[in-house]
Length: 362
Image (cartoon, rainbow, N blue to C red):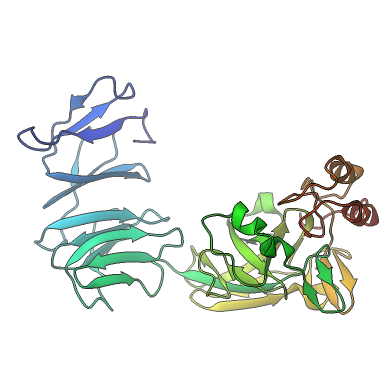
């Protein structure tokens, strides 16, 4: 579908037609018309960034005007059978070939470069790019993943604690939701790591105010009992990957959000560098978070304030009323402030203890 135009859909005939031909529709598939000006034994059709890309066995075209004109972008690719096309989150192209491995373009096909370091076999058979821009390639002798994303990344290793499930004596949060299977039910496609408390969202922004930020990127992650934050998509990683637009890095604010606690943000912008890991620990001091008294001290650790079950950024009577309305309910509930797996009067009491507390995150 050409999202830049009037929702044109692209397709092609397959045998018993004499040869594949490119067709389009402007009425949801009721009728189809054949394109002229492009000849290719089509294998894949993709849309991204205002272009429609058509990959064939031995040719590759793009159009930016709904097929009015077609531009060949196979120059620079090897004289070999083209197999598969994948487009990453930045709109850059990766193509696999029969005998010449993997090829990459960062300019919509104007130029190409091979990216075969580490591949022990260049006879490729399949290709996929995951949301964090790691490439996966199947070859005739095995399956490979790129050692780095197709773009610069920042790796963030952060630590934060939630007041609700936190035990000041042990210095740990409870993992009742994991033990009860609530996390597996809520996130059926994810591996829930040992020690998981709940999920959080961790955001990078380049200004204090979110609405003023020209760059904001938010990633889901697992929050573990000790406050460490782990990659949600690969639980072996103790950091979060962020695709990054500036190769040299920069200064960014870190925001941690949870579904029933008040969000917090780093007190200042933190210097980050691409392709390296930046660490930040909110739990060691009140001065680690932005604003005036943005966290609660329990024992020796600072925690995010509990009670914002409706995610209004202020703890109010409405949050308590929501808890009273579903007392004794079990499972994954926003009113379950202490994450015990059941909504009780204790959750409502936690809310009342923080009434009118507000997030300091602009």
